[in-house]
Image (cartoon, rainbow, N blue to C red; front, side, top):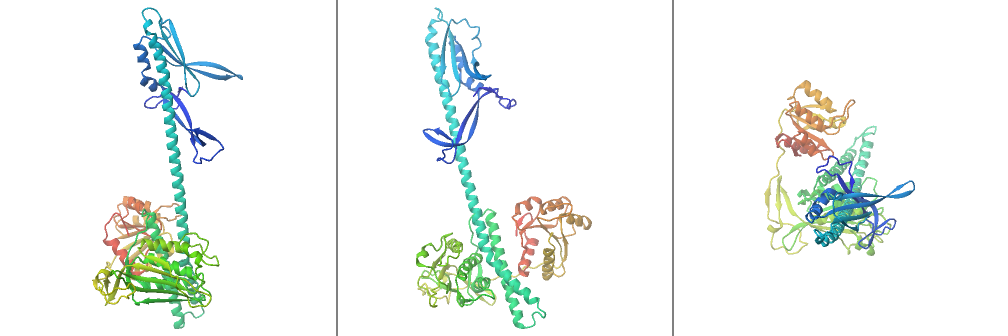
Length: 607
């Protein structure tokens, strides 16, 4: 429609006095929709919206040069539009002048040519006035040519406008489809993340809760822990709790790293005792006192130490062992085995196997072993296969292999069992007199040819483990957290490594500000601030508290704490460091963390 006066754009720059208002349906993403369709280039599309385009009429007329062309040829023109307006149940025609030359109404031209113009809406007409007397009869061909030219020009302009609107509509449709696909990917990623949390964290938490119940029962007896056997059982349960919670905490930290922007899994190799860091913690997490099957650990050599990503390898072994625990019957077994190898190409690494006495994997289901969300891998229809799918993904990232041993048999009649083999290339390490000695494949004995040859004598390179860093004898620390239990545990942990330190506590940001006001801006050497803290009157966040402390002239080292990734927020608030909760309470880890805060660079780093 139009051109019409725009009431909404009186102050636009440039000023748009009148404009075409063009509306074009946007095709729906579902090309099969038949509810409401729009035909575009011979194809039917479902409608789901429209695009409105405004075209500056005065600029269009100005750039066409229509006034100048007719003036140069001593002709006048008038461009009109006929509207049909409903009044009292009937339609009346109203002619609207869209454009006309300055002297059209007063012109002495004695002949007028009128021509209808093809448009997409309404009826447009152009009238050209010229004279037929002797002095201007020669201009008749020009008048006719001008009329044809204007008809063609306006037709072309309308076609161009239509095509621009069509391209704009296609662009919006394409952008909308990309947004829909992105939303679907985000939803899929969120679902996979939820599956990962539920699957990976559930088992260690379950093991920790089970062990807690045993510890609680033991210490609640009338005469608790009176014999050596009872104390040993509690120690075992405490180790289960510790290893399970550490594993869950490491997983959550890893997920936080992924959420921080590292969209791909990264491998962090550390010296790892395969038996004590991998196999025994996994065995403790899948075996409870009331279980009716046996879990054994075999490692050759007993102190098999390698450079590997400890968390990822533990994930793989735990998922395989947990998968076996679902199927093993009463009196059955699960065996976790590991040994080193040296390949024919002098490469070194480890073999880890998880074998059980369960019903085994039916032959027809073995080809789908590592696919996600299959119905089940056993005849009892247990499990969804998420664990094995994750194992395959992780071992691929670690450049290793995982497979099912088709030749394995458990030795139990009617229960063939299953045996999964993991082969991983990595550097082998030895301890000698408290010193790490790293053994690498390229420097090993060249006479070893078999891929099954056990590792015995390899070239040794000395790598000394750094001692725990020193800490000052006296320090004043302020710990701010609304959780009283965490405050007390933190104070106990600090006093265990430095009994002479002064440790103060606050439960809110408001209390922190009041304490600093009364004690002085330099009263504390180190301040820990939790992000989310509740108060009766107000609720200052940790970042807000840090910003107010800096504004008051506090120069203490400030470390932000949160279970969420608040690194950038604390940095913007003026904190020096940020640490992800839970805070390390183990003495050696706590000592290293505190030393890093005292000696590291200020403003702001992650710890």
